[in-house]
Figure (cartoon, rainbow, N blue to C red):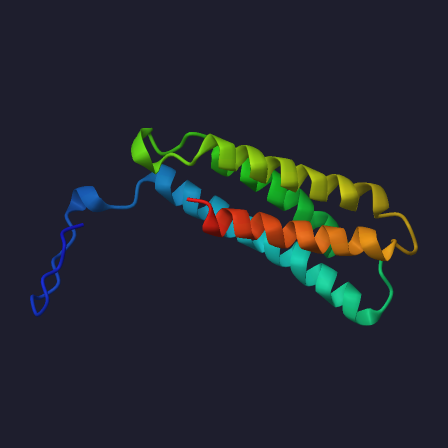
Length: 136
């Protein structure tokens, strides 16, 4: 997109600037990834507030969505160049997401989850979001 000069009227987009199918797919995947994060963290906070620490369906499905959409987002859909994400960052995020999924998966049938285990899920979820946000 052309850079705007202060005070100049906005420029119209050229037909070639339309959103590509690949870019639209990437945005849909990112949206689904954020929904997974919201399910995982929101489900954990809601469960923590009740005082009974257990894995609820929102946490379970949020962890699944996070792993699947994270893997799909890491696919080289951008065509190379500087826009490609750092492979080390992707590896760290995948490791954390798989840890979260394993922690949720194996504790989902328990009536009560150990407090440290539950807090670990929440902390790893927040660390994964921090890695996504601050690692450039």
